[in-house]
Image 1: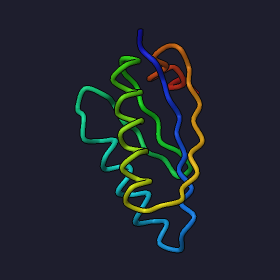
Image 2: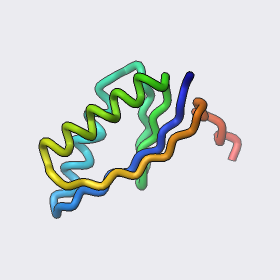
Image 3: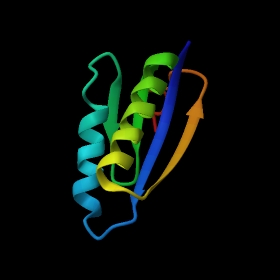
Length: 87
């Protein structure tokens, strides 16, 4: 089963930009998952287990490296990549 995951990270630090960029780099480390970044969130497209394992590990690394962060995650039970291209 494929999923679409929308993820936003809110570091509780003044160095938030560095932390967000490092987190996105971690997410992009697995080329089996498509990662799209925009101004307000990051979207991941791919197999359920791969996406969640990657997100779980990346969130853990972020907590270990930077401390307090807030994550907001939306999960859709199918791959919606390209479904809004016509808009």
